Length: 238
Image (cartoon, rainbow, N blue to C red; front, top):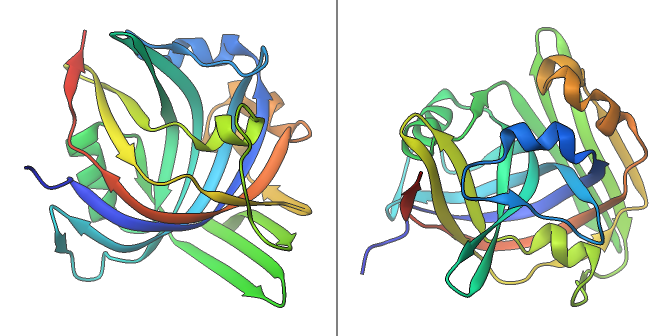
């Protein structure tokens, strides 16, 4: 049996979610997939988290095991036989090391960019604080959240389940579009009490996303995270 292409622990996923007009997402929808709706709405999510103990085909890469990632994503689905495969499409993904970005672009066609990054985490006395920052030019941009209490599982059919329980990735490549599976257990979540998102959205993601990401978030939570396995690309879509 082939080993997963990549394994890691994803921890303290700060997930800031916005309602988005389907018209701004439709041009980015990969072939053979369609936008995934929850209660009649489509969503964009800004997500920051830690990659820990990262291994490629089982091997740790020196100086590239622990790092931050911040991404902008939306949600799609694809019919495969009698099942719907619910997946994620990334608009842009930020990591701190060029080698990581090159591997992701080469093997998965993912829109990775390398920028200086840093994070701050605090989890004690029933309080969780997660902050992820990236520098463009002389300016540090920020995604941060605070939460309290114990993390809870997402209820069946809930908005929280919709955001966190997508297990496929779809990416556009020169040869078409590809599909790969991401495996992890269901995550427990803290509902965020405060949020902060400061970025020049127009130059980071594109002017079409400014209105959606300037609006009041539909939800915000911190996922506890888990061990994750990213499988090899399974097929090329036409």
